[in-house]
Image (cartoon, rainbow, N blue to C red; front, side, top):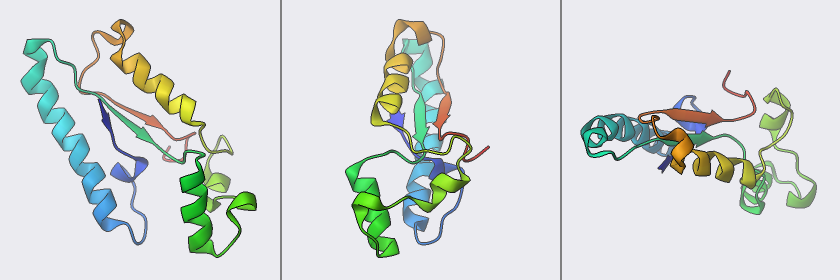
Length: 118
């Protein structure tokens, strides 16, 4: 299981190295799934958008110069679902990918961003 980011699909100012690493994860996963599928090893990737964590709010609020407690990330307004994801929503996607219910899924990327990159 790989965890990348929506930055594997979109650019953002000031995060070129981060976005590059997320693009690399997708390339690695796509190649690895072809190499390891014959051995019954599945390789998949989740690409979360904004996740409602203390770290996310702290970083974004410091950049904006505002209090983290009351800070609303500017990308939330551009997210069709109008909110950040709860960490459990990302964890549940990872659990599904790892489960037998996804036994025929390999080389796939699941974008969990509330529609932000749609």
